[in-house]
Length: 114
Length: 115
Image (cartoon, rainbow over all chains, first blue to last red; front, side, top):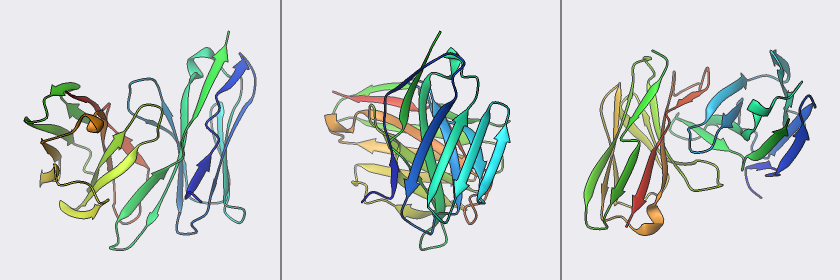
């Protein structure tokens, strides 16, 4: 079992739809949870960051963390064609030596059609 | 300055060449990372530097040699690479290597092709 599981899609939705992206994880050492957006041939861009269970909202984006179920979600409201990208969940924790390690899910490729 | 800058953006090298990738950040971050990303795959961790000291090496072949000259700079020295090493190499930094606070900032990457 991989540490972080994410459905790679692809996911195709019409403009204005609500998009739901999810990841599950197995290692309780993960403490910080992130969502990155990556456009083709670019580096990942941090969208959302959270460290506690519950919801965090930023504009059209809501990140949800359920540590008891080891499950995180990203919701995108009123999706736009410019949201078309690969969305990567990522999580970090301290593993031996006191240093951080960031582990990514496989990424979900999202296309928002005009 | 809230960026991680990587140079060069593109690099083509032969299997007998020696080259270096460079990464720079001026955000005062004390942890820096090298990741390798193949097409349609997530980034995979290679090395972690914490307070300019190598703290994690994810069993990377010795043909990749990292160096952290100071808290703002990170290099990746390449020698005798194989075609399968062709990938996007990403540098990232985070504020505090002990807590991972505030997430990681990634550069745009160096697209490396080994011929």
